[in-house]
Length: 378
Image 1 (tube, helix red, strand yellow):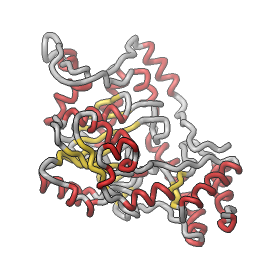
Image 2 (image 1 turned 180 degrees about the vertical axis):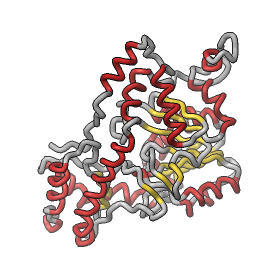
Image 3 (image 1 turned 120 degrees about the horizontal axis):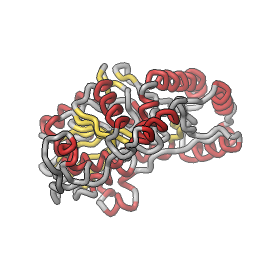
């Protein structure tokens, strides 16, 4: 079976984990955690990077930083992972579900204006599959209405929009280092802070609501509980694993680009012939090459296609279900939101196997199986 994902190893992860043990400091914000944060800040030119135990926790920190009040609203794409909405709902905000574009599958910037009112506090967007949203328009809308932009950049590390890294546009951005991501430590994340006024409080929130970080820097003579927060700090063991991967980011990104380009080159003609759509990358975007997907002609064809691939030893999967139609989404009034593109895409999208060490033999096996799929059988 060719899996949908296989975690990738650079080769010296175990060596650096052993070094973390030798340092006799394996809790959060140890030597490797500090190295990773400094590397992220240097690579992306962000004001501050704070490692977290997951992208979900980074989103929760972002939500706390907004000081949300009852009645506040946060716009999120309906086509997205649940925690993109859940993190803000847990702080008392009402998620307002937005539709996506039919080309990049990113939040549709042309549909945002009607969703904004005096209670809107933020627009939270997802750079789907590592392709940038229309940031110029979104930032202009946000500035006009005085609301915050937060990038859920779980898919987009090292992708670019008009030459600038994704995750560096909004006041805040979040990263994921889950095992399905380009760069991983199994489970992990980061909060990227582009607006300096958030930095001090973010450190407090991340350290269980205490000023522990300031204490260790010698800025206060003791630390105590002063704000909301939780235990969001990544262990230095995971940070050591992550550091090994991040120092090889160019090699990782090159491998993933070659896999993406192989799929596109070998499936382009087949897709045109069979009314299947391949991913769209605007000319002014540089993809992070997080995923490769197909948009099949219908739900029934997709179901049959996934079954066919499985029978041929290939694991392919669908992706998000519309948040506004979920059980919780309906409780929050999801039926009032018109998201036809989200509903259509959710029914037809299938993701192909995509992982760092995918071999040429595996790639050929997948593309040949797809080319041999008989649409007339369905």
